[in-house]
Figure (cartoon, helix red, strand yellow):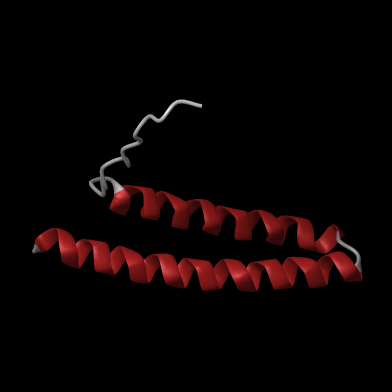
Length: 76
């Protein structure tokens, strides 16, 4: 085994804001898609959809908070 030194990648946050906004949009689209599937789902699937959408909403709120932090930090 060779003893090569590994250097961590530099912390490039230049596109964090854009990535976060894209992730929020994707998550919103997933919620909308689940609404389309909901009427055809059985009771167990409906409960799973509801639970997943609740977690998605929590993720969206966390990502939006992070977007605000990133926007604030980029202005400094």
